[in-house]
Image (tube, rainbow, N blue to C red; front, top):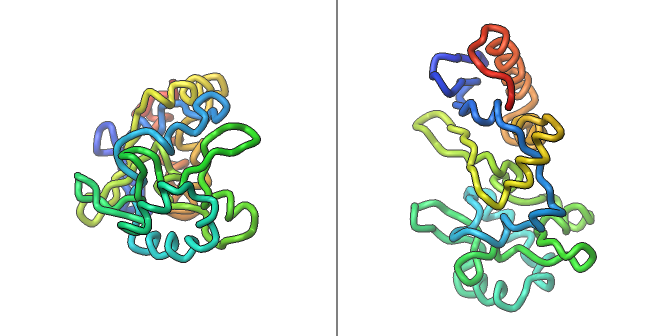
Length: 207
């Protein structure tokens, strides 16, 4: 998988086009500050694939009693997913904003995912949609290729601040989800491309 720096503010690794912001911007989720707002803000659910819809349906019985009554009603009516205004398949939401699979952790008061909690508790084999794990990186099909971009959102300002304090670039913060999505070999190619481009002055240091 060869890296190609010829796209200006983007680089190509294998069949993935990576926007340079992912490589140069700092980021580190700060749950104590945002309280999990990304699960309950916005106007659409998390993007999902058909395979992930099947996983959601398989996990539903395990987490059903942990969903609130409104979420249960929405899922009863339309299922675990729907097509949003942009034509993308996304997780069902409650009252036009809250992910149906979001819940409040009684210990911390933070919003969290019932799917992830069930997975970490050993009750399911699947954690959550990869789009959730990759956020704030967003994925979009570009013909035969995949495009990755950095989705900037004001509710993540504390994550940006913490990332700068830690000097942690976004692509390094999301190392494990990126490996889960594209593989270890692909991520190693990305790291090599970043080093080479910085050595050649084609990519600025993270800032």
